[in-house]
Length: 425
Image (cartoon, rainbow, N blue to C red; front, top):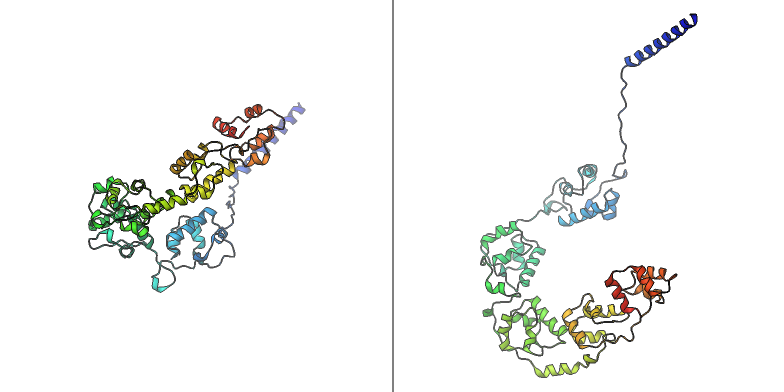
């Protein structure tokens, strides 16, 4: 019995200790945990001093903590506002500058709080000009200075004049004037009541893909289109751009001369209506044409497309870009195998090239051809048709000596395989 009594007393003692400890714990006042603060580095260097943001380059902006993309935005924004930040307020508006970033930099910026007048300091106010017009006008008669005077910038004025020249020297209607991308909807609304042009585009303007001055304003005289220069074509009613196109067409595409009046009609800037007006006055100098024909010594019907020269391509009527592209592609291929390859060349005048390949011969006897197993590595790596599969071919043929097996392992698209096999023997 004594033994059991001791056990009971020990158990009760243990319970009392546990109860006292629990009471002591729950009775304590709640402790307050210290506030957690995340420490980050400031994005502004500690040694930052006052600076003029108009003098910083891309690297310096990056040193201030801006990303490459933000720097590009900042520099572009500076251009948009006229090449200079005129004030802190203007700088703050750039969306690459967050409110937090502006707060960090604000005290260091060597800029006035708000834009100053141009006469009072070095900072300029580049606020957008308002378009102001007070009298009716015909935009066809406006010079660049006139457009600037009513509120457009110098570049905008130049763009408006270029658009007018593109149309053939006249806006023709309010409808066409509105289509000028420089004229915003807001500005057009301001200008529209004062514009002395018909609202709708005249039918003669709509029906002609290329436009020219009104016939009644032109005093036609007999002319030889082979000796007419840029100014001469402009005097016939063409815009400067159209005149240049006609001269280029004659000198580059036709070898320097129109053989018949109908050749003139083939130039895309001369509409059917305009050609009919010009036709009675066209007087071709046959002697001049004979001399030019005599200078053309190449018999292109006997010419090989794999040996034709740059000079001969120019003589045929191709421009420098087309001729260079054909010869460059031919060199990379090691020679043309079929005439369609020439038509597939980039940056060519397809109409003239079609005539060229119809006239000339194609000799493929000197074009290098190899099997996949013996093709030189340098040739595989440089040939336009093989270079993207060169590594695989070189690897597969180390353990396979059969072209048929290598073709199967390459798993090429049919059109690629067909193209490559043009140069496989």
